[in-house]
Length: 481
Ligand code: SF4
Ligand code: FE
Image 1 (cartoon, rainbow, N blue to C red):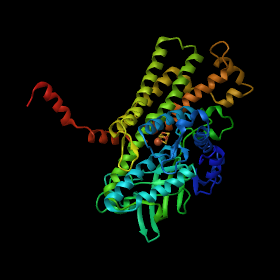
Image 2 (image 1 turned 120 degrees about the horizontal axis):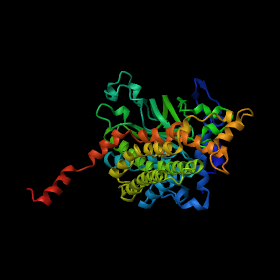
Image 3 (image 1 turned 135 degrees about the horizontal axis):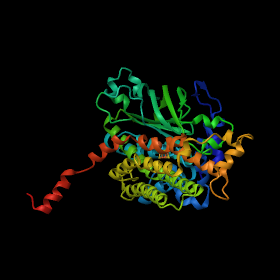
Image 4 (image 1 turned 180 degrees about the horizontal axis):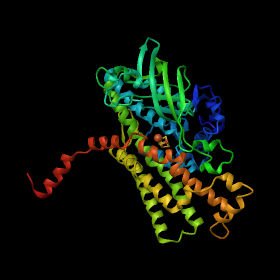
């Protein structure tokens, strides 16, 4: 059975990469205190897939090989698969309270599966079989795959082929019978360093004259010519301090990488789109749709943990019986479950593509993500309200643990009889972490910009809404000709 253990996964990513952080080259990144939590998070995916109680959610049967595989490598074969995807993402959010990074390649794979089929049907190319061969390797080796879409984009008012620097969008700079050579950069690369492979896609719908930018391919993440720069996040250097309490979520975290492709060779058998401008927009939309569905699961799981933290701190503060606190917790649950309803709804109304795989409802997936750009901020606001101002005035762990000042802080941090002051300290730091520290990147900023900023969903919602049909409803009721 091609299911890796967490330890086997960890071994598989211990490879040389050209990585920089704080202006210096990082060797053996898997031992770096800032990076380690993001690896723990991905290891959790592999761990849960080994457990009997989560097997039906975390694994699936491959339609390509008949093997039991990790669901993150599955090509959806039914509505149930689409629903189980969202359930799995909520489960992982609950277990890690951050971005677990493996969905991007999963969503890229499911998008390319149908788009390659449709390209072949129209143009007689051979992309679909190529992609299937590539994806069978992913399934059989239980590989973690990143999906790279966002280009640096240069001057936003100009098209890719009008940019002063043609590398502002990743493009083909040369090719021969064996393969292509690409140059450019992909940014906001969630989990890139923790991935064995990456699938690269265009970032927008391309037009005639922009064929060199219509390129999709899959390669190893440490292919020659690739340079990585680790993204900074709020309060990240707390992970380099002596204690762990000030970090908040000290076990788990996300990871964002700036990826530079400097004349990278891609063998032709790994190229899944080369110049098909008319399919570039569809690939972008499908990937966007799948990833907007994903947010109806992952952020809900993180929301569950934040709601739990708010409830716990109200208990520790002795405010849990106050009616306004209880009402705020109800509001948090209401908002969180609304997001989940959107994730489940767009999955339930999924449909089958000609290639045979299933896809979520595009309009509802975009509505889902539009809500995700808002509700986590309100849930976070309510958590801060319930926790109290102490989440931004709390002294450091070093003070809390110091021989001189520690006992005094402990005396004044205890609120209720029988309460351990350190437990209260931990929960306060955890809420701080999720609302304004490193994990706020996973919970809030990523909710805003991941899978496309709010405006991109509104474009899709507008495109997919038939206002004429709605006007006709009124006319029919009112007998207006
Ligand atoms: Fe997965 Fe959510 Fe992270 Fe995207 S933001 S990779 S959907 S956990
Ligand atoms: Fe994301």
